[in-house]
Image 1: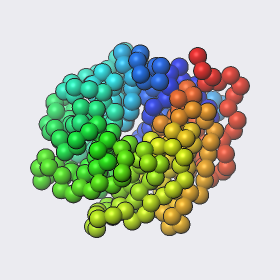
Image 2: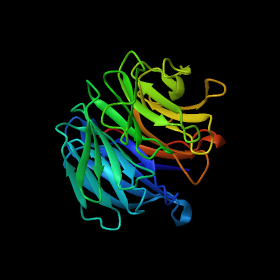
Image 3: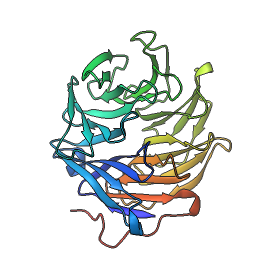
Image 4: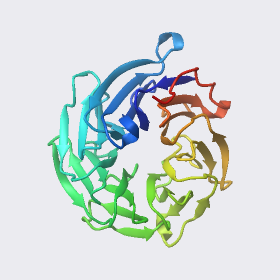
Length: 324
């Protein structure tokens, strides 16, 4: 399908929920340790088959995560290394339209509520999860259940005020804003840091986590005492998991082992393995409009978009994404 170069190291990638041809990519200079960040929006379905840039913004610190608005096709939110959550509008490419301040350390994850579309969540290194009302531009909740860095806070697709959070304390918390600020369910889901979490799109009770321990674990919230499944196959930490929007039994994962894997929960096993990147793969997403189309973003300063059901991606163009 397509390879895209990015000037900085890739951290996150997300397809638009409105337009299947639009792809957002969050990146950070010098591998996110110091330096600027950049948010890109690409049109991967441009006439002639060549992807083209739509907009990009330089930020003063790394862009560690990005999420499209569920209410406005032009708007995105970013998790910033300077502790802010910033909103951008790709029809107004002159800078952020909003900057939400409140975290006291790097923001590592951001997610937009699919149902209550004025709410976004952010997970940060200050151990907190914050809930923001973007219509008012204010923080409406601060959740402090985690004892270490929080890496992700993801809204449930079918439960409007519910989200799953994970962090460096190896805990998985289920939070219900309709009940209060304390978790309604909790489990030590791994023995090591949990970097990522997602909800099954077809099963309200299924949550999937990925950890530094190299495993992906599947939980049923109706009996949250132990994982239903443990998936082995990655050789290093699992950085991101995304459940399949078209298949209730599949998910994809990205890892520091430089690979992207597709998993079948009915088989309890990896069914496809892709190692087209040459550095850590931190971002992965599935297209909502084109079944089995995946995008991956890596520290090799490339983004790859391909149909995983049709085999491996084409070779990377010579010279693209080589280290600076």
